[in-house]
Image 1 (cartoon, rainbow, N blue to C red):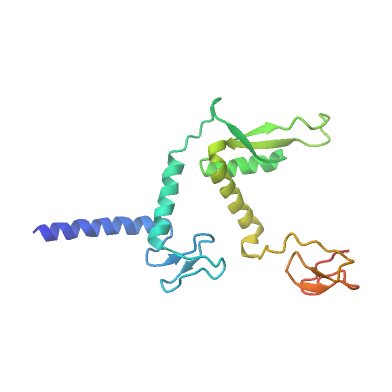
Image 2 (cartoon, rainbow, N blue to C red; image 1 turned 180 degrees about the vertical axis):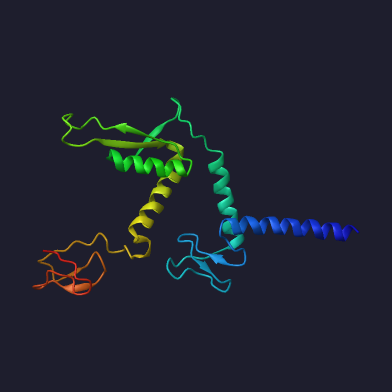
Length: 197
């Protein structure tokens, strides 16, 4: 009788854990990349794209639930005592979109006017997007994730993005594709066609 009661309770716990995993799209029987979130069979040990060690579905689910608890406990009200930091500066419409994106993740943000505009209305209105100092890290993570998704740069190699074309140099590296090529009479990348002229 006791073993039957115990096994019924254990099945209920497993069913609850399984439904929580499914609600977050996480399969406890799979492995996941902690950076890009790609899913791998249990035999996989490293992410092919990020070259980092994979975590189990159970670990990923625990991380998701921990973040969910932190978000649920975060107050959406900013007070006069909150220390605010500038997160981004830009045009009013752009900053409103970012503010709305952060609000969706329960991170309160305010828009503050930039006093350096000419005041004649011809320069446009630039605003600062501000968040609580202790919300800076999660806010930056949300904005970085949105940037990667909206620009599709998450699947691109950005290791050569800082490369500069120097016409007098023997060879150059294309900042777009990473191709190394001779600079003599060459104003386009021979691999991707990026124009440097």
